[in-house]
Length: 120
Image 1 (cartoon, rainbow, N blue to C red):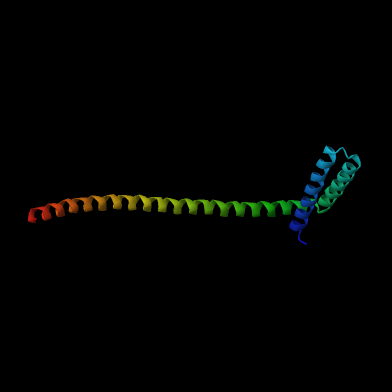
Image 2 (image 1 turned 90 degrees about the vertical axis):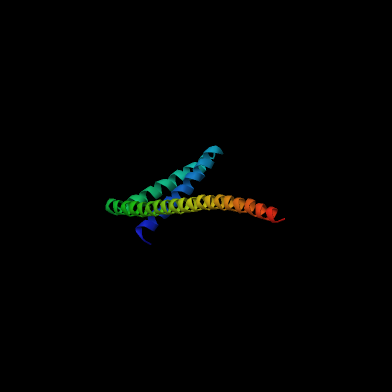
């Protein structure tokens, strides 16, 4: 298992231990609280055993991964905004075209009525 996966697994275990610890405190289950605290101490020791250099490298990997994800998300937001703006412009243009067409139809409708009335 890679250092990142191992560290994430330890963090997941720590989270579960902390959640159980909270329930133990609410229930005033002091023996369970002690077990949770011992578990977290073991996890801390295991995290430290990864070594400072490995932890630094791990943090850098995690930072890079997070930065890449945030960059992708920003690109997606920008792309979506661009697409939405284009659709909005298209809707506006279609609305203007529909109004123009309505005016043209209105003008020809009046003209046709006049022509038919004159011949009738």
